[in-house]
Image (cartoon, rainbow, N blue to C red):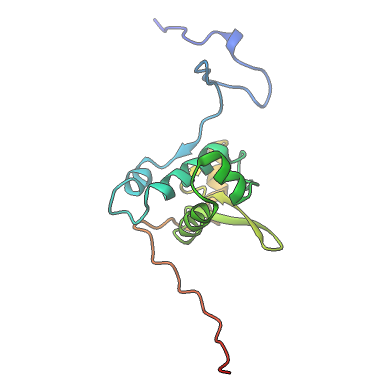
Amino acid sequence: MQLDLFSDENVKAGPDKVRYDWNPNPGRHVNVSKALMCKIWRKDSGYDQNDRDVFGFYLAHSPDGTEPLRMTFKEISELLGPAQGTIRASVEKLHHGGLLLEAEKFGRMRFYRVNPRAGYDGPAKNQVDATKEARFPVVPAPEAPVKPTRKRKAA
């Protein structure tokens, strides 16, 4: 005997159909690599709490598929709490480690998306296609590249 926990009246018709309606917070689900998440949340992962919070923010707020999260660091900072510079540093570290991928650039503004090898919101077939071009995330976090400094001319 199969229990009918989800009646048809809770299932929406069409492409935005919600299969599991966990009221009061219904919504879509993200497919993540559990093994990778376990590595990221270890204290020796090279990622700190701010990095994990920012990565979780991207997982929760990114649009479906491979679309980038089109929010500025200031907007993320206002919603998440840490300073804008902290958000920027975490995004750079997550990008360097391959958890976030640069998707769009407008002037000096860059928008990132979650690496589909780390997390994906959409059909499994689309995730398989998206991972073909995506690099592998790195844990522990790699050392950030040294940024060249401008040489000052002696007066």
